[in-house]
Amino acid sequence: MSNYSEITSIVNSILKKYDLCDQCLGRLFSKQLHLSSNKFLGKKLKKNYISKSKCYVCKDLFCNLDHFLKLMLDLSSNYEFQTYGVGIIIKPSIVDRDDFIRSKYKLKGIDSIKTDISKELIKLFTKKTQKTLDSFDPEITFTVNLKDESCQLHSKSITIFGKYVKSERGYAQKQTSCDNCSGMGCRVCDFHGISEFDSVEGIISQYIFKKFGGTTTKFTWIGGEDNSSLVLGDGRPFFVKLQHPNKRKSRLTSTNLNSVKLKNLKIIDKFPKKPISFSSSVKIKISSKTTLDTHYLRKLKNMCNAPVMVYEKSGKCFEKQIFSLNYKKISSHTFSLFMKVEGGLPIRRFIEGGDVSPNISEFLNCECKCDVFDFHGVDIH
Ligand SMILES: [Zn+2]
Ligand SMILES: [Zn+2]
Image (tube, rainbow, N blue to C red; front, top):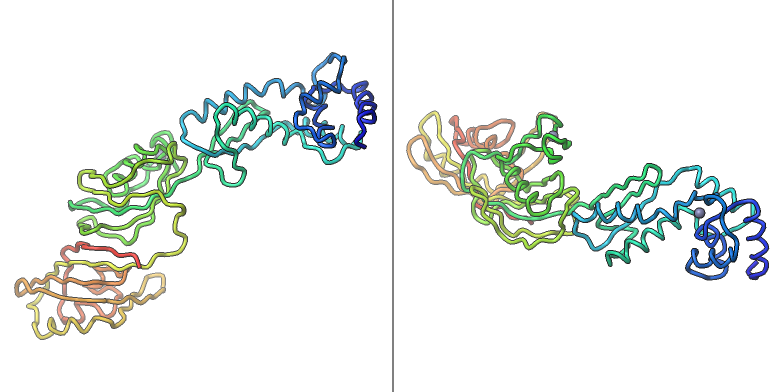
């Protein structure tokens, strides 16, 4: 059936029983006639037929698409994007009537009404904004709900890589979650999941929210430190995923945020999935309960390149390496240790002994206390 006169006879029998709008009527036949405009074809097929009631299938939904286009334009005006996608929700009764007409008149291989509404909205939106449709991985996605006349927008997350230098003691690495929502995001915390910004995480997040908008940040740190530790040298690398960003391009370099300095910031394609192996250069100040024995101190170097076993409360056990080690005796009860160690070695436990074997206290045969430890470099392998 591709003969125009055959089509005309089906059109006449449909229109005798069911009033259809130009768009819905044209859609039923445009594919077999290889035409692209359903509306134009529908108008042509209807000739002098004048509709007496609303379209049987869509109830004149197609006349109302400008309203939904406006919702999309308003909603997206606060977002920077190049590509977009559209999802549609329509009343099941519309789909049912569409299916009914198609099966009653044995019309196959045509677009569903849902597909056609999407196509029309995409046509209108692209024309208005010059943005590009991307059905697979768009930067923003609209969910247009024609049932309750609403529209939602989802903005794809971005991932930022950077390094931070912490030049002042007393800041925690991680930020405590908002009391009200435990980090899920609520009105109290402006959907950030955190309401204070007094940690490394908080300070970096605040900077990122200012630069890109968005809701919550999720960090992957390359190692961690104590509140009292400094992070010097090139700084500690981190990855941060920002949900629902308003902006997705920004000139990033380095920035000073008081006690935290951010370096090498850049937007990257993907959040790392696998654990990252790294090493840390760390300087530790240690004090001992009893007089330090120089004989043992001299032997500290022997700890290099032998495995250090770390036992966790969970029953798990892992092995870490010490790549280099130097010490400097300060007094009879204090010394400094400079080490390059495999990432993940718990420094305090390695000094004081706490299910880490060997450990410094045990090795020096005296009870040692880790007064403070600072990082002088963290290298990703
Ligand atoms: Zn219609
Ligand atoms: Zn909250």
